[in-house]
Image (tube, one colour):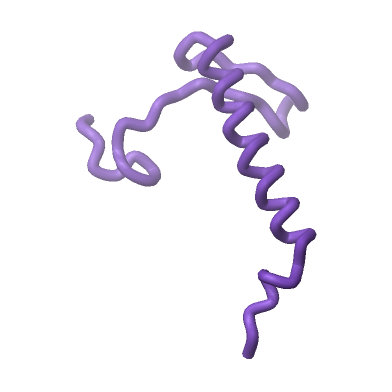
Length: 64
C-alpha cells in the first residue's frame, strides 16, 4: 500500500496552516495575557487561557 500523503497537497496546505495558526495564537496569548487569564471567544465552547506546562505531555513528571 503506497502512502498517499505525498500526492495530496490539500493535506500539506491544511497541516502547514494549522501549525502556523497554532504558533501565532500561542505568541499572541503570551504577549497579551497574564498567567491564568482567560478570554471567551465563544462562551461555553471556545476560549483562550494562558497556562504553562513545566512537565512532559499532560504535565507528566512535573514538580508538584
